[in-house]
Length: 290
Ligand SMILES: [Fe+2]
Image (cartoon, rainbow, N blue to C red):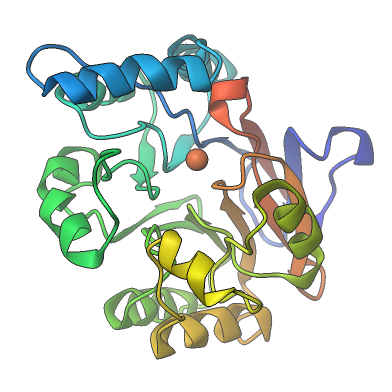
């Protein structure tokens, strides 16, 4: 596994060499589009929030999202992976648009939730609330919003919902079982793992260390975000990847922070944070035979 990306394009493009790969694979990574549409099927306050968030996110979120879908088709991506916060909240219209747009893709896609996809503005996040919204997402996750996998040409793409900043026992076991097969594997989830080199920029932009298993949280800030300390399974997940237990874990792709970044999570292997879709961001990932 080797990152072959030219330094000049590192924020928008990633090229990874994979030993033994049969043919080049093209993947498009889209995250944090935050589109906010609602109509009279939702409460008035949701319609008002939708209008407000369209302004907050610059008014072009939907247009950029449609462009990304077209780009995937024109570039002939082998798969498009959406890592959450695609919608600002699960209004009827947002969910309808998301499904409609995914339906335009001419190749397979994977989707997982971000902390916003299942959270209305008037809600405070908790695991029960997320579970209550899961059925809405069955149609875009093959019936399992918690985790999933597809295999393309001998490479596994794993998708995981870590939108509560946690990885539960079932998710940990799933990822472990997949990695144990020894096949080159790419992981996709919304919230990045804490990596020391990502901390400064995260704190500069967000003031709080909004990463999985991050140290240094102020307890009051943690409460405001609706978070708890990392569960044992979350800590084990973090250790499993950052301590290099599975060298076939080739790369991690996430969003949440809205700015692009690249950080080694283990020797020579990287976690890539992709620029937010509402700003026109996406990442082209090319896997090349090595
Ligand atoms: Fe986001």
